[in-house]
Amino acid sequence: MLIPIALSVLLLAGCTTKQTPVETAGDTRLLLDTYCTITVSALNAQSLLEEAFYLCASYEELFSITLEESDIWAINHANGAPVTVAPETIELIKIGLEIGVLSGGYFDISIGRLSTLWDFTGHSGIPSEDAISLARSTVDYRQIIIDGNTVRLVDPEAWIDLGGIAKGYIADRIAEFLIGRGATSAVIDLSGDVALAGEKQDGSPWRIGVRNPFGSRSELIGVVETGEASIVTSGTYERQFESDGVIYHHIIDPFTGMPVNTDIVGVTIVADSSTIGDALSTAVLLLGSERAAGFLDQVPGFIGALLVLENGTLMEYGGINFQAIG
Image (cartoon, rainbow, N blue to C red; front, side, top):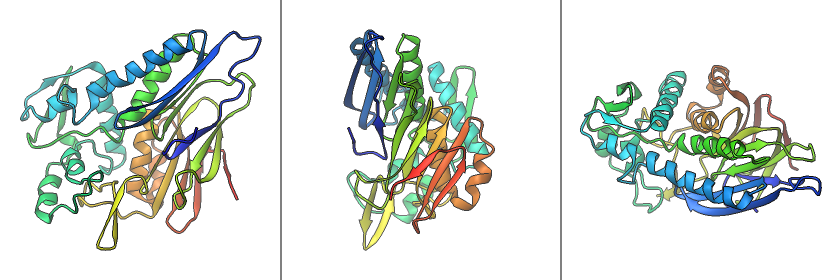
């Protein structure tokens, strides 16, 4: 099924044979403010599928910036006081901070005030310069302090937003859970964050379609072939609105407070983990093509990348096995 996201799994053939008494179960549900598809092959596939979706919802309750019960909500509304949070929240924030360092602050999880200021759902228009300036002044990942199992914000007005990395982390945790419970293979597709766990029984590679940024949602620009890995795609085309003839997209530059002026319209990352792939896909869009290679070479777990530039040029880095269509 091709769902309205940047990636779709093209082939899940060979997951069941007469020699292997496994079943395959899959479903698409609305979680994480998007459509999430999970497919699993196992002896007890349907029950594992239900547990996987439950796990996804549980992580959303930790990482959401909007749910009042979440760890992130508690941190953002603590007025700078330390907040005790789950080990998973600590782990994810630490990864976000590491990518912040490697990207020179372009990937910044303290961007919450800016990301919530821009409305790419209701299209309420462009925020005022004063509002952008005020929100931008709170962005600085170096002001997030972790002490044991607590997190505090030095600036009490700052907000953490894990939207640029949380889906990848959740996909990884679901994949680990399913394989740990005996699944022979699984595809976790959280609207562009795809974790491929296990191997197809026919021995063929996974084939992942990459959306054409210049076409319809169902039009592909090519296919990535890979073994067990994670593939994450992000693009300026995903969420945007038009005002006075100008297109404003959802990738916000933490230094200007505005949608970033980038020459990249789409990026696909192949990595050892979806967590890393998720963060890298956003960071590369922010950095632009000239700085992308040097940045990617620094990141452990990076395998390969495909960049689609605004002029239609395709640029490949690392060990990505990409086959263009047409």
